[in-house]
Amino acid sequence: MLGKIHDLNMSAQFPIAIVGGGPAGALAGALLAADGREVLLFDEKLAWEKPCGGGLTHKALQQYSFLAEAASASNPVEHCELISPLGQRARFHMRYPVAIFSRLALNGLLLERARRAGADVCNERVTRIAGTSGDWQLITPQGEYRASYLVLATGARNPFRAQFLSPISPSDLMVTAGYFIPGRSSTMQIQFLKGITGYMWVFPRTDHVSAGIAGKMGEISTAKLRRILERWLEERWLEEHGLKANGLRLDGARFYSHILPSFRTQTFETLEVCGEGWAMIGDSAGLVDPITGEGLYYALRSAELCAGALLAGRPDEYRDRLQEDVLPELKLAARVSQRFYRGQIFGDSVLEKMVSLTAQSTSFRDLMSDLFAGIQGYRDLRSRLYRILPTVMAEGLAGTLRRPWHSAGSSGGGSEFVIDPLAE
Ligand SMILES: Cc1cc2nc3c(=O)[nH]c(=O)nc-3n(C[C@H](O)[C@H](O)[C@H](O)COP(=O)(O)OP(=O)(O)OC[C@H]3O[C@@H](n4cnc5c(N)ncnc54)[C@H](O)[C@@H]3O)c2cc1C
Image 1 (cartoon, rainbow, N blue to C red):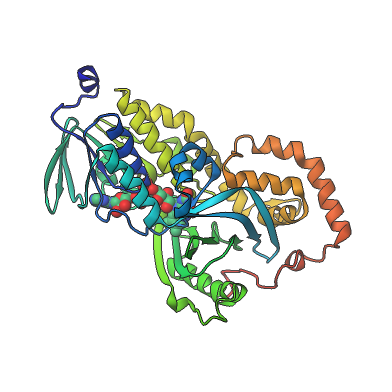
Image 2 (image 1 turned 135 degrees about the vertical axis):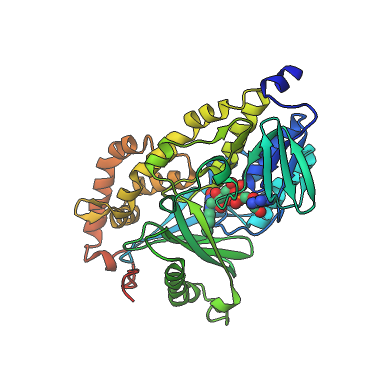
């Protein structure tokens, strides 16, 4: 114990401070406290409905089985519908459901675990951090605290990033806008958009849906994204779900907006996540998939890796563990993100081709299902694609012969509702 404290350059009389009690901070707090460390965990809001889809993959549920066990807090969604920018639709069954949580429930559950493990959870906003490794001072409106080690888990709007690193560049961020709409659905919908690096989604939770839109910062404004989303929801979604008929309108819903890290390749290449006596985890470190916007798994995983390194008495190993475990996938996602959203393949856009193959081929649907489950990574995606290509082509051809291909916008029972953000 003393040896560990010495290695950590920690003073035994101070606890470990975690700033931010979202998924990253709360899990780190639970793991450290469960191992007997004194933990001070600060969150200015405690459990709250953080703007989010709330979708957790099968991979995340397998790794953090206590979340799978909290089944009643989430909606296990088995059906997904993809809609291409030109309106093609592909609906498929997901072999492993996505568990969609309200963030109020998810954060509450994680904070409660931290509390039960022995972390001292403080409902306070940290306004200033001073000091150095081994003796940090944290100032809140309620008081002043001292800590030996600092874990920053303050999310994408990390107010302390500039103090420890440089702030996140706008080119490494996405802007999002969305609504929490009362109502139910059993299908997760993803609508891709023409000319936007991002997408719209409808993620059904237990008693409402989180519907949102994301686009690269600088490419499009939040106000414009909001207008596109509102038009889509009012013209299509409410109608499709019979909610309009029930008198439900968007004005009964609650608006949200937030930023989301979406790091470029060069940013991941030079990523710093820890220094003398401090570490950043989750969104505050930028650990989000730049293609899908998935951040919950990475928040939990980085918390686990950081806590593991601290408990081993080698906090700097967090950097290496992240390099081995998490960063290869995120770097690859950053490298192919532009090609995914804007690239062409066989004379069609990648997005149109992906949706049409999903509609036509069982093997391709299996692949999509595994991607949504998080069990198909990017690194071996290419080799799987090559392996299934002959079957996919044969299934695609069979589908084409059964139902002649007219145009992208009219296939698969699709619609004429083209999402073109440049068209007013
Ligand atoms: C619109 C949107 C949709 C998304 N959908 C999904 C999805 O479906 N699936 C998925 O996997 N990911 C999704 N994400 C990403 C996901 O929300 C984040 O990756 C995840 O919340 C990161 O967790 P975190 O703990 O790092 O940060 P956060 O969840 O942001 O938590 C940070 C916490 O720190 C607290 N805090 C901040 N500053 C201070 C301070 N000074 N003092 C005290 N407390 C402070 C905040 O109150 C907050 O609770 C989405 C993101 C957005 C914006």
